[in-house]
Length: 163
Image (tube, rainbow, N blue to C red; front, side, top):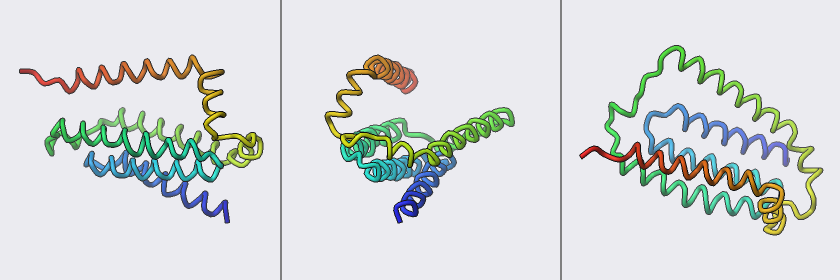
């Protein structure tokens, strides 16, 4: 029963992710991204990681998606600007990247049972996340914060209108 539920949630998450990638309307893409993030939260719940599931819903599906929709509305994209045409080389690179991503996701699907069986009893708790995030993963965590800062500055530069 649990495997069937996992496959169903994973299929919905993959379908939502594909819709985000393939749909031309950015608002619909944002709504399907929320669907994908909620499916990931359900998968966290299936792994008994209640804290991570709550953070996934509150931070990503809540706050970050509000910001994304706000930026989409702020940019006021014209209908012709939404449908950007890709050349054959870009399509090939995108197809190879998607195939690589699919291989990584498939590997994750096949190893999920092993990870769940090896996880400690406190996996997903606030203490477990805090100890690992600010312990052994402190430097990667800080590096990601710098990358997000650079991305935010880039978004501001790109969105700045010429007067």
